[in-house]
Image (cartoon, rainbow, N blue to C red):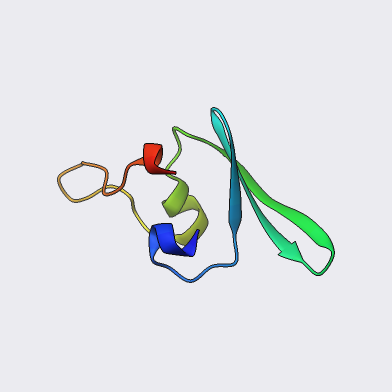
Length: 65
């Protein structure tokens, strides 16, 4: 996920349309962090980074995930 958002994180994600499951691997455990719907502003919710520019356009394309 770090390469996609250019922000340091140990989160991984799994797409189960229409949802994204965000998780971390901690030792021998997979810890589910959050399950979000594709309509939600994922970056804002998880990292406080807006995916909407000042003009109201998305700065990234979820289809690239």
